[in-house]
Image (tube, rainbow, N blue to C red; front, side):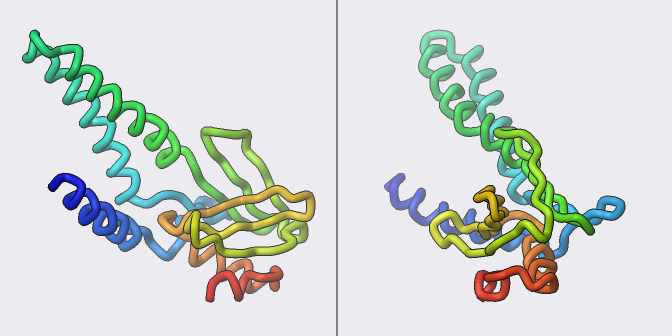
Length: 166
């Protein structure tokens, strides 16, 4: 029964997260910011809150506190990296090009003239911006502002931008 609920819930949650992603990028001075929207960020907070709530629940179950803490640890193992990714991953684009910020690697920059190709990866559900030096930026479908970024890539006649969107 639980596998049926999970199989039913996952596509519904993903559809809701996709629906909550705004098409427009947030403006930050002269740049536009592509980042995860409210729905995805809220989901990361829920995972972390569940981990903390379950860990606190161990105080009220003295006999089985080890098992309860193990369950809290599983939520934390999923929630902590997801929270970091959801809160700290972003792409900013402006007059010079695109900057990628992530908790997993240093901030990188890709000038508009250095972008060689744009494709879409169905498996990763993200657009792939490839530079001439093989650097790749992968803005995900669930990020708010991706349609605006793709429009800017098309406007600048970047190879593959129109096809990636189709």
